[in-house]
Image: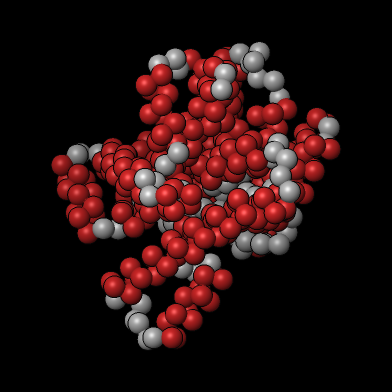
Length: 361
């Protein structure tokens, strides 16, 4: 592997690490991700924490962009796709769903009733009702199922057609929540232009485009600074919309206040993608590169098990103790997320020593 190729691949590993951290943060609720709801509306920390909540939404799109960058340019027949990719993801989904289901039975959340419980598991597995965070695997499976078509699409598109697709997707992601809020009292219209607001189609193509089509070698760092300026400005716009909605509805909670969070996720994820891809070549230390690659290789396992670790009684107690000792709740939560990430990484690294598990993770 050439030096340039090694560094290019390292950029994707760093993206995985950053995205996974923010996935964990997304699951911190009122202690982090939605901490702004417990702050005085209009205060500095209110706006700051809300901005962090909105920016967090780049994480999942970034994962699909990484997948698109790596997979859409490959040549594989259907047999290889099913044997190497779809079966692996489906088996991982089955096993981790069973683990969570058994844990719920042990904890008493689910009462074991023999064959009925087993049947309910498979029904829940089919419907995606075992654990909410596993929705990502269902969406990823869809991407793998349509992978042959996505590959044909990206190879046949001109640059103008790429831009046309991204403009369409961006427009839908921006105007759809506004339309829903203004004309339908915020009720989500699930089937309106839904194809252009999906993680498993647009974002993989966007990742492929940025990674394989666009030449970023001449991109200036001041352009990245400008991109971040635009990204933060759009984040502020979303925050204002959330605040206006709160003023009109009186509701400021995780269930009702995320209507506008993904409006500019495309800009957000693109900015993060370009920033990491551009700055990664400056990392020359081989030890650091190896460590980052190893951690990046564990992120799938971290995603699968982190809710299980976060809800452990001892970890909850640790989180509460950290919140009591550290004056700032957000700082305590960020440190807790780092701890969860490290524990899950170590656990995944150990599991990957097992031949069968290694193939899944």
